Length: 332
Ligand code: TXA
Ligand code: MG
Image 1 (cartoon, rainbow, N blue to C red):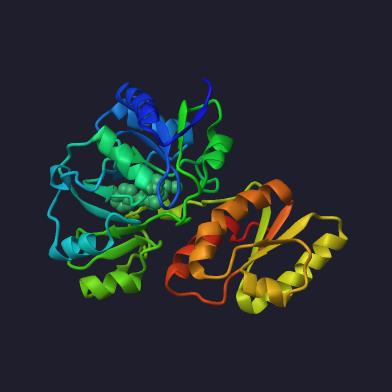
Image 2: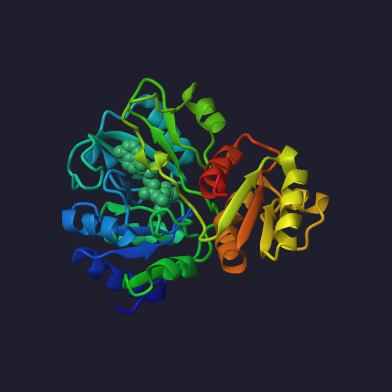
């Protein structure tokens, strides 16, 4: 199979629609990361996503719909706080989990009685979803556990020859995946942190919990437990206060002939004396936006990435740190 990268045009949508209606998959951009989409009503198509990605079959998928789609045909029991949150943040990087009506294939939620729904803000994604007028089940368009894709070339790198079409919507501005929010309880509970922060949710909903699995309990968002986002090279992660230790490690590895790079934000880059730096940018939004691209650049250039965490640890950085820990945690 030859993989084609196509621009966001009606012509590309027509080709993609035919593939999706026939049970195939198409990669498409969103404002967070690229997704690998299939018709959510088609069990065989949804199952093929798991196969192509090598995804564990207990990790449910998100369905993506355009902003005018009637989500009450897919889910039920939408609490008042969820209505308010939708008005404030959608379309946008917030995925909301509700009780499912069981209308999409059970393969989407891996047999759970809930369904995660996302209305992406990316203009190309909105146009594509409107054109299809279908709920599109889509995980991030990367090989399972590899770094998520924030550009069409990243998707090509992971799936060249394995999928037919990648719709190219440019670099994803957001850069880390959507916040996944459980809206089945009294108050919303964050299952996966992301660009919409706990503080922002609590301000609208009055309160917002953060899910932590208790010992022995079935994990509510199974994606959280896996090792994820890992580049194909050695990695290490240091806290901001341990940046000198990170630099010592970098120098000792360099002396032993290892091609090592430091990955940090631009403020930290100014403080340390290293010649090979993967700079994540200045603001928290820049750091989130550049994280996966720099991890992919790092795995191409380096034998070892030594990441230094940003000093700021709240807001969007909660999501960034979650990804950094899973990508670079304790690989050495
Ligand atoms: O930004 C995003 O969310 C991207 C783009 C493509 O939309 N998608 C994405 O999908 O990150 P994926 O499959 O890589 O991550 C989906 C996350 C997983 O952690 C999964 O466990 C959780 O959402 N999830 C999906 N359905 C769920 C459900 N019914 N209950 C709880 N968690 C769910
Ligand atoms: Mg993913």
